Length: 403
Image (cartoon, rainbow, N blue to C red; front, side, top):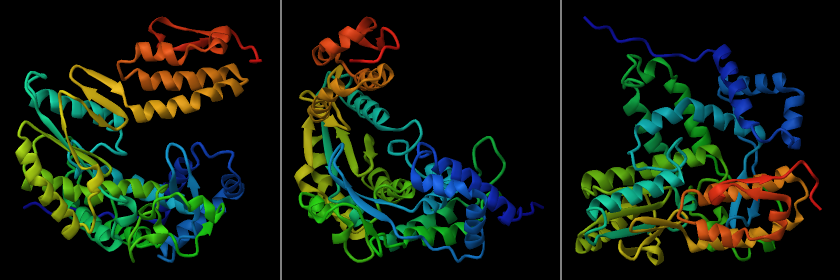
């Protein structure tokens, strides 16, 4: 007779060890920040205090800092206190693989190996298959959600998260493993932590950095200060990225299982359906709108709902996909053009090399050789370095200081 294996129970020692790992994850690229330096000055004591609070379930998040950023576009960011970021990394390390097992293959955002370039490649693949390698006309329905992060209902999100956790509890971790998630994760602890993170109101007691005028040109539905009661996740938190996928995972299932959309993909709240039947695409729009409104309390951005002809091309995730070729979208290109004049202020050859090669890395995914020659026909670049064949890489002549 098969005996059920006992559930895993987290020990204090293991929790403290996991917090150390989460701390090193949280401090990555933040080593010189004052808040990180202060935390690290007494790291062992700070981590032990955090472990005590989590162990005794007395942990409460500290107030966030709110500010506006303008690059790549204007948005409101809520930065959690550094110790709370450690807790976010702890939760992410425990749960992200489990949650990702519940996502469809064509969910692209914030998943290792499935970022923007993967999403563009999948859209291109869907169009190619539906159009029989661009020999037949097909159409791409694009939709997105109005003020998505600001509209997420936190109670609904918690309900979805807990259901996902419980549904995966006795599933095997992978096809090669006989272990179940129940044997490696403490689900009682995850339930507690889910509630603490998800139900937090980030606006409460937050510190505002900057002036009120910074918010003047920010759309009303892009600010948590105007979100409905019990709604909104802070952009900037690691867990918000994970939860945004969990929340719209419900939409993914609806699109695939109920509407039977074969060629469907989603990046955060930007999703598409490819079909040769334009009338069918038009017919599913009200069903999608109704599902989002009634089940997830979200609103479709009707101004961005469009059906594109594959022969004319479609813009998606910073790319413009046309038959047999993919270009940089006009929006992305204009953003790069605005930044290029800043090259004149760079004095370090290594910094110059890093910046130019980051642009070249973007263009490497597209048909853009002539465009690269046009953009980087800068005397300063040619004076201090050279481009390798095909303009795939920029190399400075030496370690000279740029004048």
